[in-house]
Length: 385
Image 1: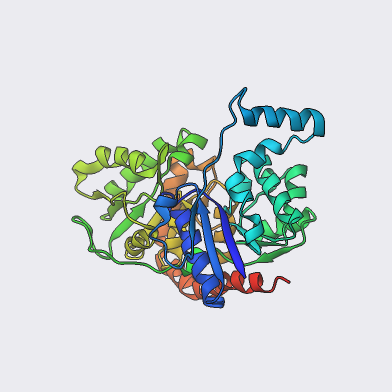
Image 2: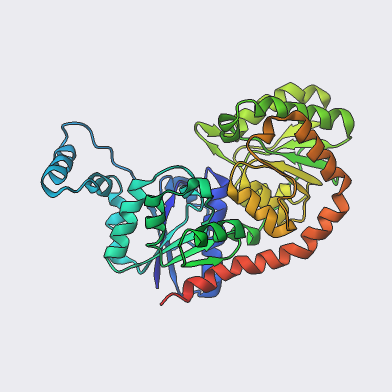
């Protein structure tokens, strides 16, 4: 079997790296002889991921007005009524690989949370027209994300692997039946423990992750996050390790966390982790924290999977669903509106401190089950006819 992982933006987003890194490891563990290749928009950032057989670079082509491709698109639209021709040009690097693979793994687990994706829909149609298997790996999709066009696209998939029960229920309730429940593969990802940085206090350091994505979705959330950090400094003796997890241009956690560092560095209780660590190295630090507060889903998965009590600055179904599958409720997950409420953030933080022992007990009991669910993804993949 030859598998191509696609719709990967690159590993400067350490969550995307975690999906690929854990996914290929789970697949190879299930069947070491299978070929797993990856096509990436930033292949240079993915070279450190082990077990990938071949790494391809994807370039999405632009169609300039009056260019040859623009003329071809116009002809196809006017004569053949084919409005999707431009997408086949834009995504040519993926489409030209369709004849060479048996299974196509769409690994952008939350790509369907960001509006309509007509180019993606067209690629999926091309894959199915060629008689190949199409799998959505580690999906998270909310009711608010669905449209009739998107539902029809999702019905093309031979297998959708939902990483939490909220997504599975939403999809099945909308007539999408080829859905299996697993858990995010990143729960199984290894860690690499580097030397602790200056200022780190063992057994008494809390990780803090905040992202430009959250700030753009709720501009008042940054002030509330500042208020929370101030509360931690004034009312506890915890050291705060500011923890970036995405370092993409225009979406750089490190840049925004630098603002927090500059604001609070005089306290002597704040440090910022480097921006050039990979996913397993960040997990190595997160696993040695006493608590974690995070906006990036895979940073919180690194914490959960290491038994670290975690508060989530959530903004989508994935955050809610993952917490619900662990705790039975959306425990310590704040929604997009709540994260601009300083009192709510502080109240949830205080609750996390008070319930430290019980939270750790739940994680110790539940995470082994969640990891078993992660392994089911590969098992379901190989059950495809």
